[in-house]
Image (cartoon, rainbow, N blue to C red; front, side, top):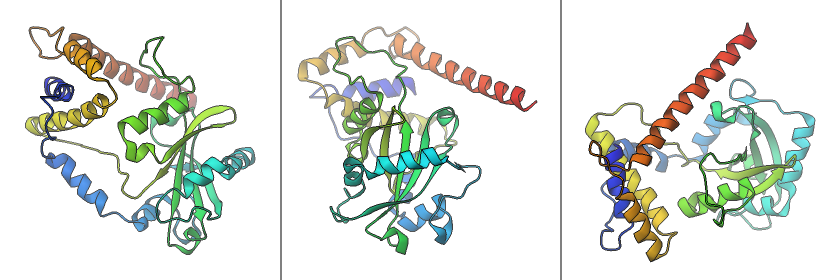
Length: 281
């Protein structure tokens, strides 16, 4: 997978090598087809509590304090967030935006200890009548784990950096995001649409895994290549073709980085489970 990933990723950085992405593997085409068929009703059934148009408090959604609710209400009353809520083409620019409900959103281990909220808005009275649903995700932005050059033009604000990255890597998502501050903490805010499904692949054979790696590598490589000048693309392409070991056709630093990242993730998860068990005991 690592070899296939690097091979197809590198192709996007040479003008003569650039080709249309290969056909979608079955593991990707199936969820893509499912996503295209989803409607607001599917999103409502998954995320909110029936006709009450509120978040079901329980395992996934937790109650917020009065202070949090007021702060989130002020955040979405701002001009920038009001504009984000009406940005979709079928919504009126001057429509009234009202917060219907908000809750802490527990989504995996990465959200624990950070601010993560789900916010339900009514834009122009349509959500209250069941005609439209405006669901927003508010997530705290943290310091990046990956290093960067000191002279790189990277925003110091972590939320602004996340939004900039999304606009360059996935413009369709980035244009539905803004950065803001909540309790003096950097957060990025994005609207969730019915077609926004996380790609989850539970089990594949070896050949399908290789096809998926190559296909996704071409997408990410194309997004990275369009951010670089011609000379920078050639330099990066040359760097990726260097430092290949005799046993694997991928840069040694990339292989080591991926292995180290997997190890750190597993250790952090087990440490979290241990602390949870000790606290319960």
